[in-house]
Length: 302
Ligand code: NCD
Image 1: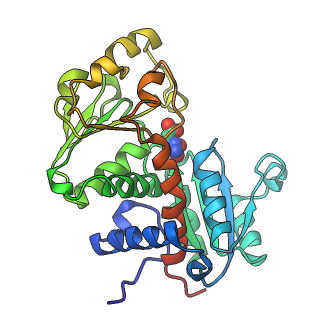
Image 2: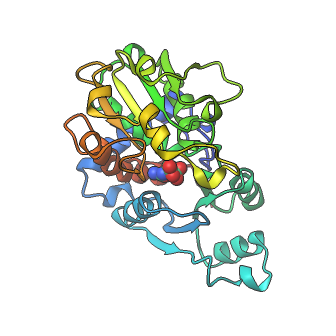
């Protein structure tokens, strides 16, 4: 059976369960393959990152190179945007030079949607993080990593801990894990960092929130998205920082995840981040395979 994909990946909403499973199958192939056979039809990927990034940008670059594509890292600082050129003109020019895949990170939530609408069928847009809204490839790599440890998503108990309100990673993960059948998701954090409107179970007490869970996904406080932050780091760590001791509240075999960048000593201690239950670097490794799969699978008629 051939599974057709959308042209853009802007939100987890763009993917059906069958498509998500196909991404995982191709990510598996990518983890074994010599990769030439994963090459997309056209081969120029542009990274347009207007917010800081280490993992996501490098991961897309490595993924693109592994499947034999050309990669262009657009340098916002030295670009003609500073001479008054609009974003859409910049995108048109890059597309005219042969860019087929635009990997975009921007603080404005509408931005990747605007670019996708503007490009029509001329190129694909992959959302690499739009403000607080979504980060679909991060959620895919997180769920793919979990699929390598657990066979049945329906049985999983997952706590997502920290700044849920401003986290695009949390938002995409809640959507994706729900699609995959996870029934017990708990959002844990102080009231000021929990979502204001959600149907997902929220919990302000860390120990109660992670009690008996199979997975604890820790998040960084998105200080750059919060105008007035009334949170003291030491107090936050005392209440929500994951330590070896507090982790005992979870299932003894519980796995600890974090999308990075981690703030050691704030949302989790080094003992936890580097400890036997941590799969943080495994997430990073799988991110390359997921991005190879996504670049390979998105529909292109251009
Ligand atoms: C996250 C992001 O940028 O959304 N990092 C990532 O992509 N791996 C999380 C964060 O910045 O805290």
